[in-house]
Length: 314
Figure 1 (cartoon, rainbow, N blue to C red):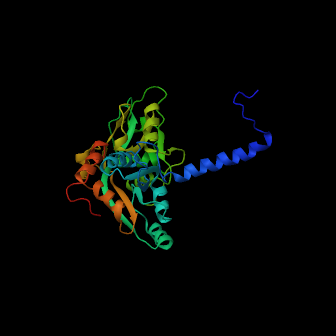
Figure 2 (spheres, one colour):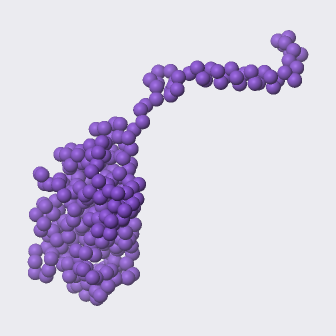
Figure 3 (cartoon, rainbow, N blue to C red):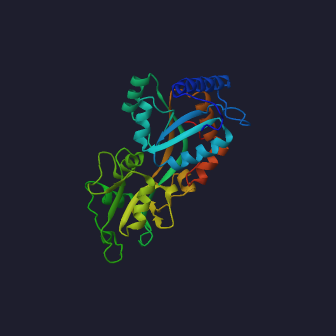
């Protein structure tokens, strides 16, 4: 028995269902668009998104900038990804990124592709410096190295394969030099080849090529006989950064802020950002902030070298 006393025939159920649905739609239609519920104050305004892609050397710095800028400009979200300088420049060529991070300069052929695809010229911004550090395991007794010795280890015609050939006494089983390098689309890879191996020289086959700057340092920290190169900002207590001399008999310099700014350290390089043509709006505001004292303080805080006063121009 139905306790309500109301008789409902089965044939009337579809009609009642349709009526209830129509009533629900009518109620929904009467609500304001973007309603977020009582006390919500409505929907939040959409954020401006700046796409920032490229150099793995710069990815930690770029992320630190993005996180701090979110406090300065809450309406702007800077979305950071790595992949290497080549990845960022390729995205710039295709017009799919607002800012490309790079630890090397854009090549003429890359600029031509960007012009052809987008009708715009890549514009370069200097945003800091990085001393490209040479890392060994903390158990390795070596403290300094020359550019010629590095070339002997890494270059295709280099003959150095053991630490003992450089007068370094290693623990048993660790005499073989394990070369840690970067993948070929990395700006770090390109700069090391140019600055250390010299024009016309390439890398010796058989190195362990890592996808990220952090990966290089981590592998060196776990491999007693390893040597690798990466940004100075990635150092850890488990590795040692070597002093580097231009040639035998010269002073060997440590990768520090001061030695980078004075150009004493021989393998320091610029950190760059690129846009397509003159930036405008939020992108320009963000780049201006990166060059400001607040933005440059983050460069130093993340282990890199800030620009000297007036050093923001190309």
